[in-house]
Image 1 (cartoon, rainbow, N blue to C red):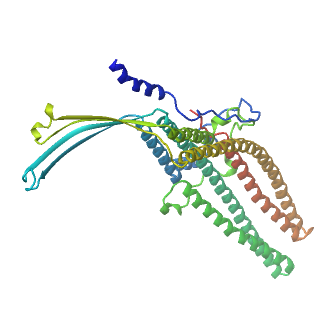
Image 2: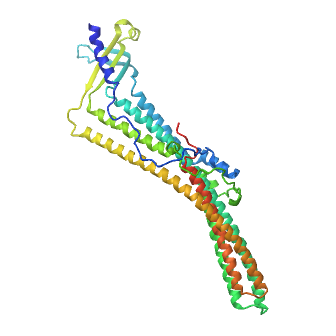
Image 3: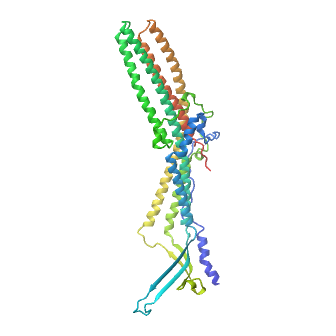
Length: 460
């Protein structure tokens, strides 16, 4: 009978600890658009589809050394350590202690100035009973934080790869525009020299000479602007790669021209049915929502009593030789119960705050889902429109180059004015610049589509 009475509190505590206060997480129900089920997942090394070894090396370098990734990886380690702390709270805590001391009493006391030695050693254990699931909710939230930080790291890796690819393509675009501007400048300076000779020989008017000077000056002003854009893009790309301050100013290597890059074989044309499982940012937002939901239970558990158990065993003696003998043994056991009675609404305010944070996390999750579908639709549209734009400008450039050839031929034979040649040259240069930008827009749209579809990340 005495044994049953002794075990009764433990049995009650075990039964109560089987439940946890606070809401259990359920994924929010969202209205989803129609999605195609036959869209293949994006490969984890999606950038290799462009078949440019220099681009491959740059993205690999950024994934190893970029400082934002280093910081995000450290956040994962921090969250994992916090989860370990939360797990430790569920288990008993044991500590050891030992001590030695000597004291002397007053000569006028009953001890008569005696010297007293004391020795003690012992083990102490303490355990907070998780009756209402507070500690388990804390661990649930901590594990969700780990998941959120891991998925945020994956999302950052995808974003970094996309930024490196787009910056690399931007650099190649500026290189092409700069090469076109330099070629145009050389052509216009040669034309200016020819106009100067003809003017000196009385074979052309001053108007043609001044027009040639103006066009040469215009090209001369464009070259340094594009050269500066190339330099700034190199520096921005070097930062993305995680290079040291000493290496940022070093020129980056060059790979294929934009026109020589491979066209990805299969570009998805529809929404995947499992888009939410493909995107790390959506999974990170949901993990944060799970953590916020669990912390509501942590806040609510403060309404209920908490019970902690502590016990100790050891020995104490005035002589070291007797410290571990049977008569020197000591022990103690205690159970403490604390329950809130009046706290001026502090617990209620804590619950309200936890509920508010859960609502914020829910709104972030819903917006992330919305943005995921918007990004995908925008990227699919951009891929088709930028390809059409590039094709149209290719045809326009071919026509303008032919028109320039004919204009020069007509001018050399006296059938048209030099103004026709200048207009044709100006048109060719402008479309060459626009074509480079169109190629950049198409490749950037492909990168954006890879990123919108999750970029190779799959929920585990």
